[in-house]
Length: 179
Length: 188
Image 1: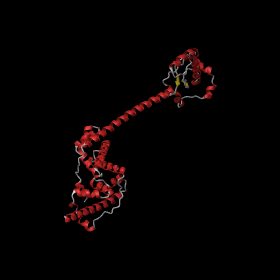
Image 2: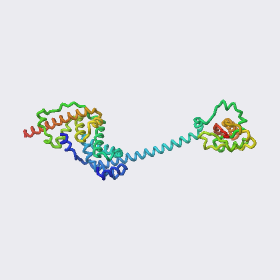
Image 3: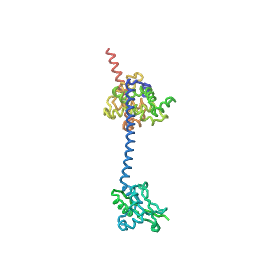
Image 4: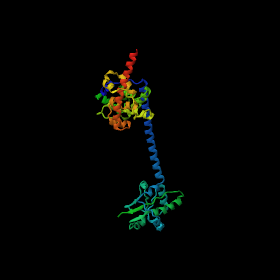
């Protein structure tokens, strides 16, 4: 019986109504355009998110520093240091170029040795380390292995800020001197 | 599948609209016939067929040329039809049957060749919906019991027992139809 019934319906074909084809392909076109729109919207959203993320990072770099392992910003240590001495001995690190120009006027210049490197966090990679001319005081830097740069830069920048009368962000950092 | 069909499917996979229209014109009569078999009205069949075609073009990339394209299409239409009716909740698949009118003697005398396509179709549609669905899926579309069970969400044994009952019910219905036809001929 199964074979008999199956044989009856084997080559069955019923023509669909005339408008069915157009209706189907109109629907397909709608689906395609909706997909395209979703893809464009997704791309725009991604770009906006990336832009917002980068803008947030640069506007608030402390967030980046708080996650950095290279930063040693212990407040107890900072308070114990003689700010004036450090100010004279340490190079200044600032995150903006105008800051450097202000500092160069306010601070006695110190020329950093050629092998001196600043271990700055990733967010600071674009910031140029302050180039200062050391002159006579070059010898004072040589025996120091690790110098906490942040207190000096903090104090120096405060001075600079007071003189410049404008707000600047100052990044704590560690300076390593290689032999 | 012939090479022309393979090429057509490949072009459809790449999203060529002209190939999709050619595929539609080639298979739409078959697809619509299957849709019509699983729907109550022609309007429902049109909806089912359209939904099925959208699925066909959407999932064509997953189709392998080693398989039968016609079989793949049939499965999509049947699944779409069942989903359609599940949404509408017009039928269930666990119906006890009381409609076996034929006696064992009648069944012995039963010859399916005595009936034409329209009569058999009518008899199938007269079956309880669950039986008719299992019967059509197994006998006409060529599904296996496991596939029927998965599609309908029932046990494999339930599928087997429903098919068995559907066969008996179909024979009974056909015999009863023949009896009624004889009576009406005698009265005339």
